[in-house]
Amino acid sequence: MARKINSRQTRKPQKRVVGAGLTEYWYLKHLKPLIGLKFELYPRLFGNETMGKINKLIEEGLNDNADVICFFDEDIMQWDSVEKERIKGLHHKYDNDSHVTLACSMPSIEYWFLLHYENTNRYFANSHEVINVLHRYITHFDKKESFLKHQKWVVELINDNKMEIAMQRAEFFGRNGASYSDIWKAIKAMK
Image 1: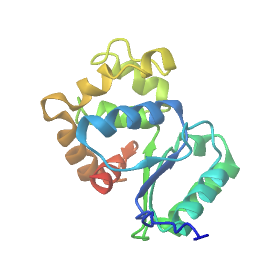
Image 2: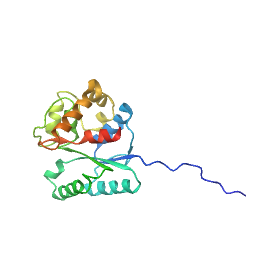
Image 3: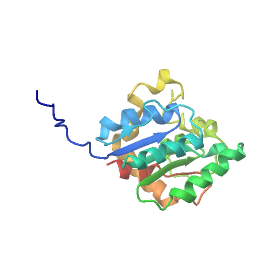
Image 4: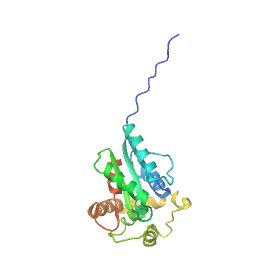
């Protein structure tokens, strides 16, 4: 009796997106088919991962020979000294690593959304302050799954070249202001 030979091709390493947050999860899930991005979400559903867990997910991705793109908010540094040190450690370890893209936002991903509409890097104390301004443009924006699961809000973000404008604004500001977002780097890495 002949032995069965595994004829499947070895899976080519791809881009793996890791992160924390329901908003990030739904944004990425909608954005992927809308603009044809190539990546896998890992874990399959983002939760409230700690920066320690995110670091482990980055290492797992690198061990699997994948380029890793990591989404997280940095406002936690304002009230959690342990997470602040972990975030600093991530930047120290990965800011110059060509296989890792840290797509962090201060205070939160909602600031990235706001850049689609406003040219600002003014100080926002937290995501609630950003969301209050964002309501001028996405009137029903809410961080609850009942809102986020609908693709319409992401479609609105990419209409009329708004994403390209946000990318230019975020790149121009860099991390020089009170608010910043490196999500533009992630978008480039996922294309």
